Amino acid sequence: MSDIQKCRCCLPEVPDRIFKDDLEPHRVRAILNVDKKWVSGTVLRYYFFSGGSWGGSEAQKQAMRKAFKVWEDVGIGLRFLEVTTIDAEIRIGFEQGAGSWSYMGRDILSIPKGERTMNIGWDITNDIDTGVHEIGHTMGFPHEHQNPNAGMIWDVEAVYADLGGPPNNWSREQTYHNIIRKLDQNEVQGSTWDPNSIMHYPFRAGLILQPEYYQTFDLNPTPGLSQADKDWVRWFYPPLGDKQKPQLQLDVASELDIQEGETASFDIKPDKYAWYNIRTVGHSDTYFVLFQKSSMQKIASDDDSGEDKNASVSVWLESSKEYSLELRLFWFDKSSSTTRLVMTEETGGSPSLPGLLWSTRLCNTKGRSTSSPVIEEVVSKDGGMCSCGDAGTGGCEIM
Image 1 (tube, rainbow, N blue to C red):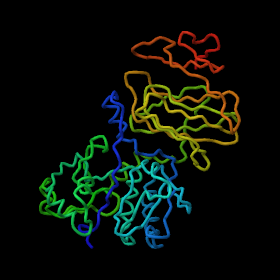
Image 2: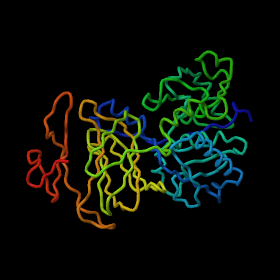
Image 3: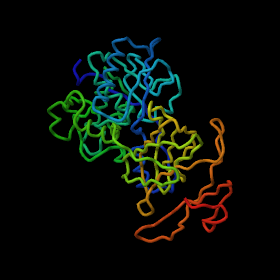
Image 4: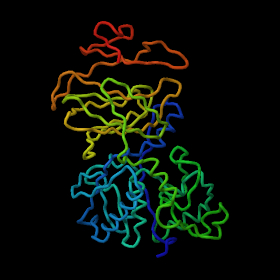
């Protein structure tokens, strides 16, 4: 079967994310641009179904292992680890005739355990690009042929007829969702269409009316990852490497000097065994994950995007271990103070019982100026509430 004739990936449909009505449009756009992406340092475990209709041959599994390696060889901050337990984040079935598909990015975390997050619906032993494409979806990358910047105009009925017949046999709804539908501008990166992307389908001549060239010639992406694929995946998932990271110090606010969509990394070396609270301060949307540094095992995470709160985790940390925190900034209010990351110790507690988190309140304790606004935290050590007027008195400390 030629590339033009072969089966296509059919993404599962999931409900659109619902935001509060009063959320400003730019904030929504910024969140949607990256909310399905992971953070660098994440180890995504993958599991192959072996029995029943979802089971795959060893040759099929080996092709998928090679597909994972294609992405890893680019040099990115994600790792893929094969496991034999079904609690893996990525669960791959091989039901033939059911199409090839994957849920998008962090959507896989909402799929019930025991269910597939990906399916390979045909023999890919000589076609690992199908596997590379599906893994791209798992990493949070959409279909490139649905990029609104492509300027593509379809012969719509011809596309419905083509995909409605063998080997795909798609319904009109499936064809619309996977081909005709243009992605929202928020869901794509950059302003340039990449017809050679691994995330782009091939199309026979005549299905595309514009660009006019494809009325006569097939659109057949070059096999493998394009240069743009490599550039974008490294931008979203920069390699951690051995570079020195800033230390997140106790009671010292660390400013996030990054732009929307970008990532920041911190090392944490606790002075003692205790419960700690790590949180962002400022009007922003973030997603961060705390890892144990030696193994990059996930310890805790939080995502405050679209909410009227800041990302925050309370965790038991040990002085004998080192930790790494990886954060992605979705959006921040450029008219207010910068976003910062803070770590404080909680009072009391044990490894199985959290301590008392000091109550916090943001106050403009130093006065606001248009050039350098300062907003600080006021905390109460006894667990009571502090007003901004109490800052610095009566056990209400300024952090």
